[in-house]
Amino acid sequence: MGPPAPSGATQIQLTLTVNGADHGLRLDNRITLLDALRDDLGLVGTKKGCDQGACGACTVLLDGRRVLACLTLAAQCEGRQVTTIEGLAGDGRHPLQEAFLRHDGFQCGYCTPGQIMSAVALLREGRAGSDEEIREFMSGNICRCGAYPNILAAIREVARAGVA
Ligand code: FES
Ligand code: FES
Image (cartoon, rainbow, N blue to C red):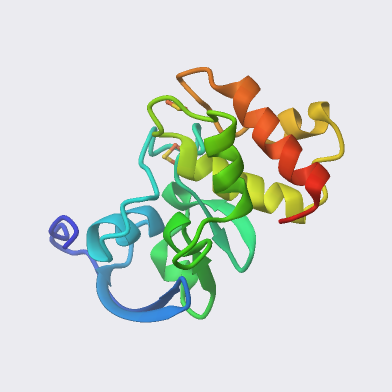
């Protein structure tokens, strides 16, 4: 359960569709998608870094487009498809997850779900034509461990293989 609602908060009933499954929830109308995913649905693969829209750790897909879950209200997501790292590849691994493993695209791993969700969208957006383009369109995802060269190598490999 999320934190208790402050007095005067409005509770709403909504259905969130996450990774293909519907979840009926009763929430404070100001709860972010990030807190709903982590605290109410137990989907803790989506990380809370800055909680201010500055780090990209909370990146998920909303109707296939990347959004920052810490800046998105859960109430905005009813009737839309939310995809988190847990639902990216069902029981298997997405080609980007395999590539991150092959290229050591992480150290502590805290930024990794956000990096991968952002990279999924980047490939769909056709923004992986060059290293410069990948760097530019991944620039909202910060890695405090500095794994950028390996992250770039992983995304480049999948982009060139055309498997995602
Ligand atoms: Fe959302 Fe940092 S936690 S951008
Ligand atoms: Fe540690 Fe990116 S792997 S923050």
